[in-house]
Amino acid sequence: MSTAAFQGSPTPGTSTLQGDARGAHVDIRNLTKVYGSFRAVDDLSFTVEPGRVTGFLGPNGSGKTTTLRMLLDLIRITEGTALIDGQRYRDIKQPLHTVGAALEATNFHPGRSGRDHLRVLAATHGIPDSRVDELLELVGIPAAARKKAGGYSMGMRQRLGLATALLGDPRLLVLDEPANGLDPQGIRWLRGFLRHLSADLGKTVLISSHMLSEVQQTVDDVVIIANGRKIAAGPLKELEGRASTRVTTRDAEALAAVFAQRGLEARVSDPRQVEVASEDLVLIGDTALAAGQPIHGLASAGTDLEEMFVRLTEQHGNRNTEGI
Ligand SMILES: Nc1ncnc2c1ncn2[C@@H]1O[C@H](COP(=O)(O)OP(=O)(O)OP(=O)(O)O)[C@@H](O)[C@H]1O
Image 1 (cartoon, rainbow, N blue to C red):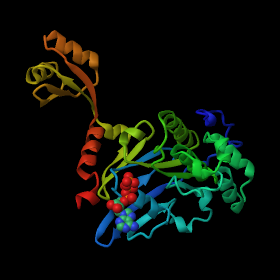
Image 2: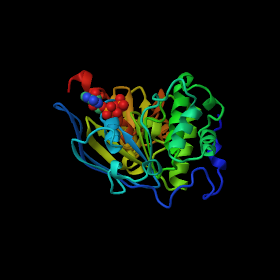
Image 3: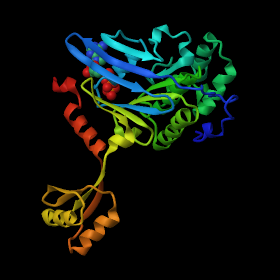
């Protein structure tokens, strides 16, 4: 599979992905979905900006897919609005050219090749076959796409889903868990591809994920939900907070005091463990050494946002099974 297919794409104007002068603006306002007495999405509001990749994050069952389905008019909204450039999806004149979506990677006809799947869709929208082949090349499955989709791996289905979403060269791309089933190389490829679409072509990209770590290097903005409600939203850089390091030692209290003297914020999390609000391993190591304190282990403890996300996932892992 090509990992750089898009990198060589021609200059704007002739590219397979021409881009628009602007991506579409998404405005979700007080969106609610109720099933019986269960609030799958609860008074959710956020915006998605053009030229950026927005990560829509939350634990399993938190309401991400339900929100995206309401945005795309696949299910009825109970309350609130979900607008794309000020319009409901159903009122958009040329939806394929405005919004490209890949909500599920499994809904291709198993007996039809990926290429034929795209060609059928292209034909019904007056899009030439040549574009189908260009897109298959672009997403890295030019040969595989001639085989029946029933035999595709999850990663191949994801790539075909992406090609389908891109068929109309849309201004907004909505992808549900696009990294699912991709190998590390595929995830790296997807990351570069989505950045190209947003940063270079100005498109709006909205991707959902239940794993912050999977999209952390891809997204500019995040919207985090749990139990159908918004927990946090904003630029990733602003929300990430501090990175910290977990230090294993003989006497955590003594080492924490040493760090504090050096002006490093430190917290004893275990009699043998200290969390230091720094990712400077040299500084941490040298400080401990100078004070004669042994270090038995040093590990990145991630950022404040990562810690919050892990906590959320633990608390709200699956509200169905928890009966919340
Ligand atoms: N048709 C439905 N009827 C009843 N409950 C539903 C229906 N569709 C979804 N739900 C419930 O709504 C909640 C949110 O589901 P949703 O699929 O939106 O979560 P998600 O965040 O996309 O999860 P995942 O990361 O697992 O895909 C879940 O508890 C789910 O069981």
